Figure 1 (tube, rainbow, N blue to C red):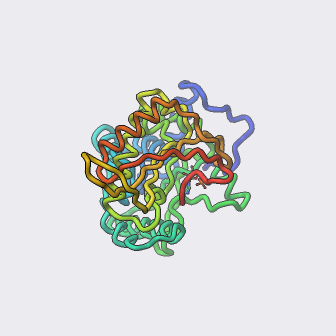
Figure 2 (spheres, rainbow, N blue to C red; figure 1 turned 90 degrees about the horizontal axis):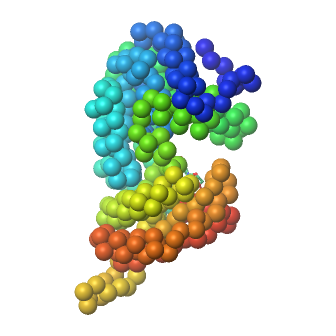
Figure 3 (cartoon, rainbow, N blue to C red; figure 1 turned 135 degrees about the horizontal axis):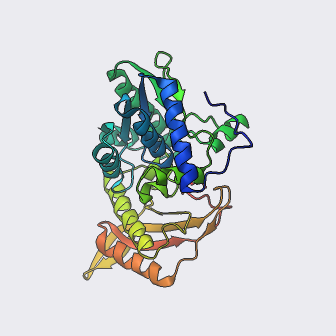
Length: 327
Ligand code: XMP
């Protein structure tokens, strides 16, 4: 069993050879820990849970069951990619739950950001628990805990359990194969495991997802406009090779409308806000200096292609005093 302390002698995993050695060692450790037991994993599609899933699939194959909960607040194409990579390519036991209606119904009319976060967090646990109860003979819960989570939970900054708050009668032994790794090492291992670059080098994405970028009370039409505009932003950033350069970039669609003109007719639609920041640790952040032609292209495409958006704004506020997210 691993301890929670990273030994000083442990090398920084930054080459394919070191990643391969780590993978081999973890396969042995995982097999030794779980034997022929069954393991459950909440697979978000983020790099940490994806790397844990890929490691476990290599070690124990179908003894692992992954549950991917689509809360309806994921970015365009994300649930499809999880299904493609894990079910179709890695042949994983994957339970896909489209809980969009459930989440959006619970969130209807709720405009307070922290209440929105609480509803999303609680509903996530509820859906996960319902799926877990349908399964039999699960003894282990795998988690994508990484070393900074351990350090922060030691310092009392946050509880590190990704799926914390499970009910008393549903407690599992934890399997946390990347808990001694830093983020860059997790990415290096993910690359060696053959996961696609979009997963391995994914920008940080908050648990409440697009829910905190569709400000105020979420509506389905505005959420859809946000998802489409965000997809255009990601596409254009990738076209300019910025996808691995800018730390975090996304669109916010606030809950107010402004006047515009389309084909000689007055239109009253939402603005889309571009937010692109560079940061090391998310504690402070600087706005990314985007080239003007990119900003113009984004404005042109978003206002032409996304129904309901007639204006594009660019948020150039550093943190402090603006947080990265708008809510
Ligand atoms: P802020 O907006 O506080 O964000 O400057 C700092 C970083 O944290 C992410 N973030 C969240 N991540 N759950 C998460 O898992 C949340 O509720 C949440 N809120 C913000 C944000 O995307 C940024 O990377």
